[in-house]
Length: 239
Image 1 (cartoon, helix red, strand yellow):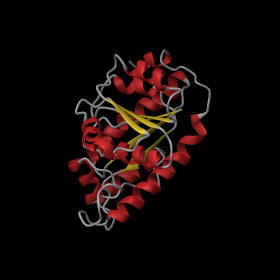
Image 2: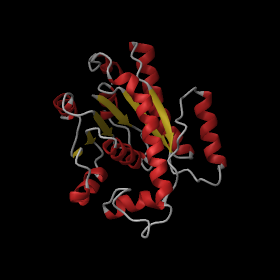
Image 3: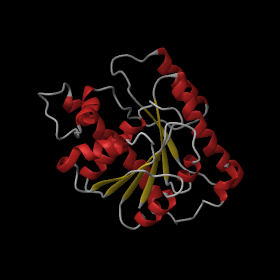
């Protein structure tokens, strides 16, 4: 099993959208996927409930995940699913360090804004702290979200320059701003249960989602079969 954590300490960074895109696409590829919903807003849990029988058979969601039960869920599911995705709160939380202790890979969604970049920096600095102080290196990447396909804004360019200066890997596939992604949450759908008549550029959203998931899969697979070294005790250094 591979554990993939999505983290940004600022809300509204496109984190939950990224989780849903990757989870659904991995399920479409034939993998079994469980999402641990640790966001108090429970957006993914509510979306999955509205999906009903439209939900992919190999995708499940565990709601109300807290610092008290995260480890229990991770251990219970370790040998039962191919991918475990953790959706963290969009705020500073003790759950961040705890989730990192179970993670094979971390994705940091970032919009083209200074505040999103600051939220990402909080995660990146914790990852760097763990590497420097505890010799724990957790591979990670930034995924740019809500990107205008036509224009690169000055703010987005500034974010890219900041990440480059910190030598942070950025996925080559951004999440493009598409109406279809809003429809998925607003009406309890997937990109494959809604129709092209009800939303514009659905095929482009599907292609974007597929390309992103394939890139994520290529990034995480080399780490998914490594030894299951427990990092929880060492992570207490970051508390």
